Image (cartoon, rainbow, N blue to C red):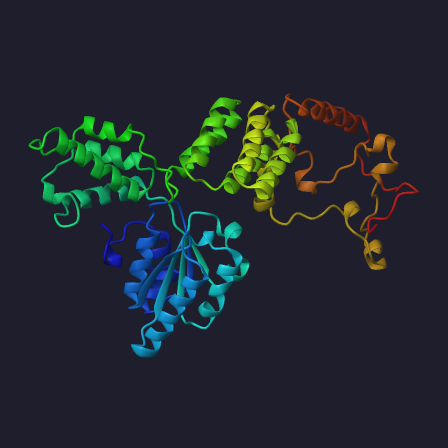
Length: 440
Protein backbone atom coordinates (compact mmCIF):
# COMPACT_ATOMS: atom_id res chain seq x y z
CA UNK A 1 0.00 0.00 0.00
CA UNK A 2 2.97 2.36 -0.30
CA UNK A 3 1.93 5.37 -2.42
CA UNK A 4 3.71 5.68 -5.75
CA UNK A 5 3.27 9.44 -6.04
CA UNK A 6 4.09 12.17 -3.58
CA UNK A 7 0.57 13.58 -3.97
CA UNK A 8 -0.81 10.40 -2.35
CA UNK A 9 1.52 10.57 0.65
CA UNK A 10 -0.42 11.00 3.89
CA UNK A 11 0.67 13.25 6.73
CA UNK A 12 3.76 15.37 7.47
CA UNK A 13 2.26 18.52 5.98
CA UNK A 14 4.50 20.53 8.31
CA UNK A 15 7.48 19.61 6.10
CA UNK A 16 5.74 18.92 2.76
CA UNK A 17 3.43 21.93 2.65
CA UNK A 18 3.72 24.11 -0.45
CA UNK A 19 5.41 26.92 1.50
CA UNK A 20 7.96 24.67 3.21
CA UNK A 21 11.65 24.54 2.19
CA UNK A 22 11.53 20.86 1.20
CA UNK A 23 8.50 21.37 -1.02
CA UNK A 24 10.09 24.40 -2.66
CA UNK A 25 13.27 22.44 -3.36
CA UNK A 26 11.28 19.59 -4.92
CA UNK A 27 9.33 22.04 -7.06
CA UNK A 28 12.64 23.22 -8.45
CA UNK A 29 13.80 19.68 -9.13
CA UNK A 30 16.33 19.76 -6.29
CA UNK A 31 16.91 17.62 -3.23
CA UNK A 32 19.36 17.84 -0.34
CA UNK A 33 20.76 15.38 2.16
CA UNK A 34 18.59 14.96 5.23
CA UNK A 35 17.82 12.98 8.36
CA UNK A 36 14.22 11.84 8.82
CA UNK A 37 13.57 11.48 12.54
CA UNK A 38 10.29 10.09 13.78
CA UNK A 39 8.49 7.18 15.43
CA UNK A 40 7.83 3.93 13.56
CA UNK A 41 5.14 3.81 10.91
CA UNK A 42 5.23 7.51 10.04
CA UNK A 43 6.40 7.04 6.46
CA UNK A 44 10.16 7.60 6.55
CA UNK A 45 11.04 4.89 4.02
CA UNK A 46 8.09 5.73 1.81
CA UNK A 47 8.98 9.41 1.78
CA UNK A 48 12.57 8.64 0.80
CA UNK A 49 11.38 6.54 -2.15
CA UNK A 50 8.99 9.25 -3.29
CA UNK A 51 11.65 11.95 -3.00
CA UNK A 52 13.95 9.98 -5.30
CA UNK A 53 11.17 9.50 -7.83
CA UNK A 54 10.17 13.16 -7.63
CA UNK A 55 13.62 14.36 -8.75
CA UNK A 56 14.36 11.35 -11.01
CA UNK A 57 17.18 9.84 -8.95
CA UNK A 58 18.23 6.24 -8.45
CA UNK A 59 17.02 4.90 -5.13
CA UNK A 60 19.47 2.71 -3.21
CA UNK A 61 18.53 1.40 0.22
CA UNK A 62 20.75 -0.12 2.88
CA UNK A 63 20.08 -0.97 6.51
CA UNK A 64 22.54 0.23 9.12
CA UNK A 65 21.75 -2.92 11.10
CA UNK A 66 23.25 -5.16 8.41
CA UNK A 67 25.51 -2.90 6.34
CA UNK A 68 29.12 -1.89 6.90
CA UNK A 69 31.79 0.26 5.28
CA UNK A 70 32.02 -2.26 2.43
CA UNK A 71 28.36 -1.72 1.57
CA UNK A 72 28.82 2.04 1.67
CA UNK A 73 31.75 1.79 -0.76
CA UNK A 74 29.69 -0.40 -3.09
CA UNK A 75 26.83 2.11 -3.05
CA UNK A 76 29.27 4.95 -3.77
CA UNK A 77 30.82 3.03 -6.68
CA UNK A 78 27.37 2.43 -8.17
CA UNK A 79 26.49 6.08 -7.73
CA UNK A 80 29.63 7.21 -9.53
CA UNK A 81 29.01 4.77 -12.37
CA UNK A 82 25.41 5.90 -12.76
CA UNK A 83 26.38 9.56 -12.78
CA UNK A 84 29.16 9.06 -15.34
CA UNK A 85 26.99 6.83 -17.54
CA UNK A 86 23.35 7.98 -17.58
CA UNK A 87 24.06 11.19 -15.67
CA UNK A 88 21.51 10.16 -13.05
CA UNK A 89 22.09 11.03 -9.42
CA UNK A 90 21.69 8.54 -6.57
CA UNK A 91 19.68 8.89 -3.39
CA UNK A 92 21.14 6.61 -0.73
CA UNK A 93 18.58 5.74 1.92
CA UNK A 94 20.12 4.45 5.16
CA UNK A 95 17.48 2.90 7.40
CA UNK A 96 18.18 3.14 11.14
CA UNK A 97 21.18 5.37 10.44
CA UNK A 98 21.71 5.79 14.20
CA UNK A 99 23.04 2.22 14.30
CA UNK A 100 26.06 3.17 12.20
CA UNK A 101 29.15 3.65 14.34
CA UNK A 102 31.33 6.76 14.08
CA UNK A 103 33.63 5.29 11.43
CA UNK A 104 30.69 4.26 9.26
CA UNK A 105 29.05 7.66 9.60
CA UNK A 106 32.33 9.40 8.81
CA UNK A 107 32.66 7.19 5.74
CA UNK A 108 29.63 8.91 4.22
CA UNK A 109 30.91 12.46 4.68
CA UNK A 110 33.13 12.99 1.60
CA UNK A 111 30.52 11.58 -0.78
CA UNK A 112 27.76 13.73 0.68
CA UNK A 113 30.01 16.77 0.40
CA UNK A 114 31.11 16.24 -3.21
CA UNK A 115 27.61 15.41 -4.43
CA UNK A 116 28.34 11.79 -5.34
CA UNK A 117 25.10 10.92 -3.60
CA UNK A 118 22.27 12.46 -1.67
CA UNK A 119 21.95 10.89 1.77
CA UNK A 120 18.58 10.33 3.40
CA UNK A 121 18.92 8.72 6.81
CA UNK A 122 15.99 7.43 8.85
CA UNK A 123 16.04 7.11 12.61
CA UNK A 124 13.68 6.65 15.53
CA UNK A 125 16.34 7.96 17.92
CA UNK A 126 17.25 11.57 18.68
CA UNK A 127 19.89 12.52 16.07
CA UNK A 128 21.49 14.89 18.56
CA UNK A 129 22.58 11.85 20.57
CA UNK A 130 22.98 9.16 17.92
CA UNK A 131 24.33 10.92 14.78
CA UNK A 132 27.77 12.51 14.55
CA UNK A 133 27.89 16.30 14.57
CA UNK A 134 29.92 16.22 11.35
CA UNK A 135 27.13 14.36 9.56
CA UNK A 136 24.41 16.47 11.16
CA UNK A 137 26.09 19.64 9.93
CA UNK A 138 25.95 18.34 6.35
CA UNK A 139 22.31 17.30 6.46
CA UNK A 140 19.02 18.85 7.42
CA UNK A 141 16.92 17.13 10.07
CA UNK A 142 13.19 16.77 9.47
CA UNK A 143 11.01 15.61 12.35
CA UNK A 144 8.21 13.29 11.25
CA UNK A 145 5.20 13.22 13.53
CA UNK A 146 2.99 10.30 14.45
CA UNK A 147 0.02 10.25 12.09
CA UNK A 148 -3.23 11.60 13.48
CA UNK A 149 -6.39 9.50 13.60
CA UNK A 150 -7.80 11.09 10.44
CA UNK A 151 -4.68 10.19 8.45
CA UNK A 152 -4.73 6.60 9.71
CA UNK A 153 -8.43 6.36 8.88
CA UNK A 154 -7.70 7.49 5.31
CA UNK A 155 -5.07 4.75 4.95
CA UNK A 156 -7.52 2.15 6.27
CA UNK A 157 -10.15 3.28 3.78
CA UNK A 158 -7.66 3.05 0.93
CA UNK A 159 -6.58 -0.46 1.93
CA UNK A 160 -10.17 -1.67 2.08
CA UNK A 161 -11.00 -0.14 -1.31
CA UNK A 162 -7.87 -1.04 -3.28
CA UNK A 163 -8.62 -4.19 -5.31
CA UNK A 164 -5.05 -4.75 -6.55
CA UNK A 165 -2.82 -4.10 -3.55
CA UNK A 166 -5.27 -3.91 -0.68
CA UNK A 167 -8.25 -5.88 0.60
CA UNK A 168 -10.76 -4.66 -1.98
CA UNK A 169 -10.46 -7.85 -3.96
CA UNK A 170 -11.73 -9.91 -1.01
CA UNK A 171 -15.08 -8.19 -1.01
CA UNK A 172 -14.75 -7.37 2.69
CA UNK A 173 -16.49 -4.46 4.37
CA UNK A 174 -15.79 -2.85 7.73
CA UNK A 175 -18.25 -0.57 9.52
CA UNK A 176 -17.21 3.06 9.96
CA UNK A 177 -17.22 2.75 13.75
CA UNK A 178 -14.72 -0.12 13.62
CA UNK A 179 -12.53 1.79 11.18
CA UNK A 180 -12.46 4.69 13.62
CA UNK A 181 -11.64 2.33 16.49
CA UNK A 182 -8.75 0.76 14.59
CA UNK A 183 -7.42 4.17 13.56
CA UNK A 184 -7.41 5.31 17.17
CA UNK A 185 -5.70 2.14 18.42
CA UNK A 186 -2.96 2.35 15.79
CA UNK A 187 -1.29 5.04 17.90
CA UNK A 188 -0.13 7.05 14.89
CA UNK A 189 1.61 4.07 13.27
CA UNK A 190 0.50 3.41 9.69
CA UNK A 191 2.32 0.09 9.49
CA UNK A 192 0.62 -1.16 12.61
CA UNK A 193 -2.79 -0.05 11.36
CA UNK A 194 -2.40 -1.99 8.11
CA UNK A 195 -1.01 -5.06 9.88
CA UNK A 196 -3.94 -5.11 12.30
CA UNK A 197 -6.40 -4.59 9.47
CA UNK A 198 -4.99 -7.52 7.52
CA UNK A 199 -5.09 -9.77 10.59
CA UNK A 200 -8.69 -8.79 11.28
CA UNK A 201 -9.56 -9.58 7.66
CA UNK A 202 -7.93 -13.01 7.95
CA UNK A 203 -9.87 -13.72 11.13
CA UNK A 204 -13.12 -12.63 9.49
CA UNK A 205 -12.47 -14.85 6.49
CA UNK A 206 -11.61 -17.81 8.71
CA UNK A 207 -14.70 -17.31 10.84
CA UNK A 208 -17.18 -17.09 8.00
CA UNK A 209 -15.96 -16.76 4.44
CA UNK A 210 -19.43 -15.77 3.28
CA UNK A 211 -20.01 -12.96 5.80
CA UNK A 212 -18.07 -10.33 3.84
CA UNK A 213 -17.67 -8.10 6.89
CA UNK A 214 -15.17 -7.50 9.66
CA UNK A 215 -17.14 -7.38 12.92
CA UNK A 216 -16.33 -6.18 16.44
CA UNK A 217 -15.29 -9.63 17.63
CA UNK A 218 -12.72 -9.88 14.82
CA UNK A 219 -11.19 -6.53 15.75
CA UNK A 220 -11.26 -7.32 19.47
CA UNK A 221 -9.42 -10.56 18.78
CA UNK A 222 -6.67 -8.69 16.99
CA UNK A 223 -6.35 -5.88 19.51
CA UNK A 224 -6.16 -8.24 22.48
CA UNK A 225 -4.05 -10.97 20.95
CA UNK A 226 -0.71 -9.76 22.26
CA UNK A 227 0.59 -8.65 18.90
CA UNK A 228 4.01 -7.24 19.70
CA UNK A 229 4.42 -3.71 18.44
CA UNK A 230 7.89 -3.39 19.91
CA UNK A 231 9.69 -5.10 17.04
CA UNK A 232 13.00 -4.22 15.43
CA UNK A 233 11.40 -1.10 13.99
CA UNK A 234 10.42 0.15 17.45
CA UNK A 235 6.67 -0.60 17.59
CA UNK A 236 5.22 -0.24 21.08
CA UNK A 237 8.26 1.81 22.03
CA UNK A 238 6.48 4.86 23.36
CA UNK A 239 3.67 2.91 25.04
CA UNK A 240 6.05 0.65 26.95
CA UNK A 241 8.51 3.38 27.87
CA UNK A 242 5.59 5.40 29.22
CA UNK A 243 4.46 2.37 31.23
CA UNK A 244 7.94 1.94 32.70
CA UNK A 245 8.22 5.63 33.58
CA UNK A 246 4.79 5.78 35.19
CA UNK A 247 5.44 2.57 37.15
CA UNK A 248 8.58 4.10 38.64
CA UNK A 249 6.74 7.35 39.37
CA UNK A 250 3.89 5.37 40.95
CA UNK A 251 6.27 3.50 43.30
CA UNK A 252 5.47 0.09 41.81
CA UNK A 253 8.75 -1.84 41.52
CA UNK A 254 7.00 -4.99 40.25
CA UNK A 255 5.37 -3.21 37.29
CA UNK A 256 8.62 -1.34 36.63
CA UNK A 257 10.56 -4.61 36.42
CA UNK A 258 7.93 -6.15 34.13
CA UNK A 259 7.97 -3.28 31.62
CA UNK A 260 11.76 -3.11 31.76
CA UNK A 261 11.96 -6.84 30.99
CA UNK A 262 9.40 -6.51 28.17
CA UNK A 263 11.40 -3.76 26.49
CA UNK A 264 14.79 -5.42 26.85
CA UNK A 265 13.48 -8.83 25.77
CA UNK A 266 11.96 -7.25 22.67
CA UNK A 267 15.29 -5.75 21.62
CA UNK A 268 15.22 -2.19 22.95
CA UNK A 269 18.72 -0.70 23.22
CA UNK A 270 19.61 -0.85 26.94
CA UNK A 271 21.51 2.43 26.53
CA UNK A 272 18.29 4.18 25.66
CA UNK A 273 16.58 2.70 28.70
CA UNK A 274 19.52 3.75 30.88
CA UNK A 275 19.22 7.30 29.54
CA UNK A 276 15.51 7.43 30.31
CA UNK A 277 16.02 5.94 33.78
CA UNK A 278 18.57 8.68 34.42
CA UNK A 279 15.98 11.24 33.37
CA UNK A 280 13.51 9.73 35.85
CA UNK A 281 16.04 10.22 38.63
CA UNK A 282 15.94 13.99 38.09
CA UNK A 283 12.34 14.42 36.99
CA UNK A 284 10.52 12.25 39.51
CA UNK A 285 12.88 11.85 42.47
CA UNK A 286 15.15 14.87 42.38
CA UNK A 287 16.41 16.06 45.74
CA UNK A 288 14.07 13.78 47.67
CA UNK A 289 16.87 11.23 47.19
CA UNK A 290 19.88 12.59 45.25
CA UNK A 291 21.49 9.15 45.38
CA UNK A 292 19.06 8.00 42.68
CA UNK A 293 20.78 10.09 40.02
CA UNK A 294 24.19 8.71 40.93
CA UNK A 295 22.88 5.14 40.94
CA UNK A 296 21.31 5.67 37.50
CA UNK A 297 24.62 6.96 36.13
CA UNK A 298 26.46 4.05 37.76
CA UNK A 299 24.06 1.59 36.13
CA UNK A 300 24.53 3.24 32.74
CA UNK A 301 28.31 3.11 33.17
CA UNK A 302 28.13 -0.53 34.28
CA UNK A 303 26.27 -1.48 31.12
CA UNK A 304 28.84 0.33 28.96
CA UNK A 305 31.62 -1.59 30.71
CA UNK A 306 30.01 -5.03 30.90
CA UNK A 307 27.37 -5.22 28.18
CA UNK A 308 24.58 -7.80 28.29
CA UNK A 309 23.33 -9.52 30.37
CA UNK A 310 25.37 -8.33 33.37
CA UNK A 311 24.92 -4.68 32.58
CA UNK A 312 21.16 -5.06 32.20
CA UNK A 313 20.99 -6.26 35.80
CA UNK A 314 22.52 -2.97 36.93
CA UNK A 315 19.82 -1.07 35.02
CA UNK A 316 17.20 -3.23 36.75
CA UNK A 317 18.77 -2.45 40.12
CA UNK A 318 18.60 1.29 39.44
CA UNK A 319 15.01 0.97 38.22
CA UNK A 320 13.87 -0.82 41.38
CA UNK A 321 15.69 1.67 43.60
CA UNK A 322 13.97 4.58 41.88
CA UNK A 323 10.58 2.91 42.04
CA UNK A 324 11.00 2.55 45.82
CA UNK A 325 12.60 5.96 46.44
CA UNK A 326 10.70 9.00 47.77
CA UNK A 327 9.34 11.08 44.92
CA UNK A 328 9.60 14.77 44.17
CA UNK A 329 9.18 16.73 40.96
CA UNK A 330 10.01 20.03 42.69
CA UNK A 331 13.21 20.57 40.70
CA UNK A 332 11.49 19.58 37.45
CA UNK A 333 8.53 21.89 38.08
CA UNK A 334 10.73 24.72 39.27
CA UNK A 335 13.07 24.47 36.31
CA UNK A 336 10.14 24.51 33.88
CA UNK A 337 8.70 27.58 35.58
CA UNK A 338 12.07 29.35 35.51
CA UNK A 339 12.54 28.40 31.86
CA UNK A 340 9.11 29.86 31.07
CA UNK A 341 10.02 33.17 32.71
CA UNK A 342 13.39 33.24 30.98
CA UNK A 343 11.63 32.76 27.65
CA UNK A 344 8.74 35.14 28.19
CA UNK A 345 10.09 37.89 30.47
CA UNK A 346 12.72 39.16 28.06
CA UNK A 347 16.30 40.07 28.92
CA UNK A 348 15.87 41.25 32.51
CA UNK A 349 18.87 43.12 33.83
CA UNK A 350 21.31 41.44 36.17
CA UNK A 351 21.14 43.29 39.53
CA UNK A 352 24.04 45.72 39.85
CA UNK A 353 25.36 44.28 43.12
CA UNK A 354 26.00 40.81 41.63
CA UNK A 355 27.48 41.95 38.32
CA UNK A 356 31.09 41.23 37.52
CA UNK A 357 33.38 44.28 37.81
CA UNK A 358 36.75 43.50 36.18
CA UNK A 359 37.54 47.09 35.14
CA UNK A 360 37.74 50.44 36.90
CA UNK A 361 35.05 51.87 34.66
CA UNK A 362 32.62 49.14 35.60
CA UNK A 363 33.35 49.64 39.28
CA UNK A 364 32.77 53.37 38.86
CA UNK A 365 29.42 52.59 37.22
CA UNK A 366 28.37 50.67 40.32
CA UNK A 367 29.00 47.12 39.14
CA UNK A 368 29.40 44.85 42.16
CA UNK A 369 28.65 47.64 44.64
CA UNK A 370 26.90 46.32 47.73
CA UNK A 371 27.76 42.69 47.09
CA UNK A 372 27.77 40.68 50.31
CA UNK A 373 30.18 37.75 50.42
CA UNK A 374 28.03 34.97 51.92
CA UNK A 375 30.99 33.15 53.48
CA UNK A 376 31.63 36.14 55.71
CA UNK A 377 28.01 36.40 56.87
CA UNK A 378 26.50 34.69 59.91
CA UNK A 379 25.95 31.00 59.12
CA UNK A 380 27.20 31.67 55.59
CA UNK A 381 23.96 33.40 54.60
CA UNK A 382 23.39 37.04 53.65
CA UNK A 383 19.94 37.46 55.18
CA UNK A 384 17.72 39.93 53.37
CA UNK A 385 19.84 39.97 50.22
CA UNK A 386 18.39 39.07 46.81
CA UNK A 387 19.74 37.76 43.54
CA UNK A 388 16.81 37.73 41.11
CA UNK A 389 16.12 40.52 38.62
CA UNK A 390 13.97 43.25 40.16
CA UNK A 391 10.88 42.22 38.15
CA UNK A 392 11.04 38.73 39.67
CA UNK A 393 11.83 39.56 43.28
CA UNK A 394 10.06 37.19 45.63
CA UNK A 395 9.43 34.55 42.97
CA UNK A 396 9.62 30.97 44.23
CA UNK A 397 10.48 28.33 41.63
CA UNK A 398 11.73 25.54 43.87
CA UNK A 399 9.28 24.37 46.53
CA UNK A 400 10.54 21.16 48.20
CA UNK A 401 7.99 18.48 48.97
CA UNK A 402 7.63 16.84 52.39
CA UNK A 403 9.28 13.59 51.29
CA UNK A 404 12.77 12.20 51.67
CA UNK A 405 15.72 14.57 51.93
CA UNK A 406 13.54 17.44 50.71
CA UNK A 407 11.94 17.51 54.16
CA UNK A 408 15.29 18.76 55.50
CA UNK A 409 15.82 21.04 52.51
CA UNK A 410 12.39 22.56 52.97
CA UNK A 411 13.00 23.13 56.68
CA UNK A 412 16.29 24.89 55.95
CA UNK A 413 14.78 27.15 53.29
CA UNK A 414 11.93 28.01 55.64
CA UNK A 415 14.42 29.09 58.33
CA UNK A 416 16.40 31.18 55.86
CA UNK A 417 13.27 32.84 54.50
CA UNK A 418 12.22 33.67 58.04
CA UNK A 419 15.58 35.38 58.53
CA UNK A 420 15.03 37.29 55.30
CA UNK A 421 11.72 38.58 56.60
CA UNK A 422 13.29 39.61 59.90
CA UNK A 423 16.23 41.33 58.25
CA UNK A 424 16.26 44.90 56.98
CA UNK A 425 15.41 44.27 53.34
CA UNK A 426 16.84 47.60 52.15
CA UNK A 427 19.88 47.11 49.97
CA UNK A 428 23.11 46.92 51.99
CA UNK A 429 25.62 49.16 50.25
CA UNK A 430 28.58 48.36 52.44
CA UNK A 431 30.63 45.29 51.64
CA UNK A 432 32.33 43.22 54.28
CA UNK A 433 35.95 44.35 54.54
CA UNK A 434 37.26 40.85 53.87
CA UNK A 435 34.82 40.06 51.09
CA UNK A 436 36.22 39.64 47.58
CA UNK A 437 35.13 42.01 44.86
CA UNK A 438 32.51 40.90 42.35
CA UNK A 439 35.15 40.01 39.77
CA UNK A 440 36.77 37.58 42.22
